Image (cartoon, rainbow, N blue to C red; front, top):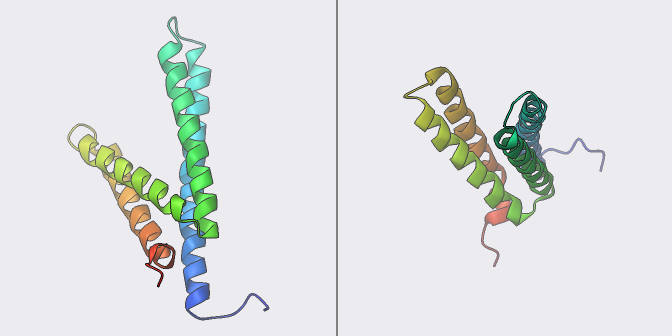
Length: 130
């Protein structure tokens, strides 16, 4: 086992790794947004809303990081978490298209693309066993 094998197993593992990396990138972005909201909260007269958003973003980022880790390892639970987040991101993007297309279109496209990647990468994980 030199790590250079080819075949269906290595392709699936490559897809899983790509999906996990995509989730980790999203998690890093959310964590950065959470930190930004937290820092911004100190400059507001009523900081509780920004603090709440910061905590929410960081909690979701931690969840996405764990989902990426689980997806990389082939855990079934991580597929549900990842697909749910991508569906929410896609729907939020579609909703934003009316008011802010420059934000909504990329959000919807990224959510849909990563969602499809997660589903394709996890076919062997969610396939019925028998």
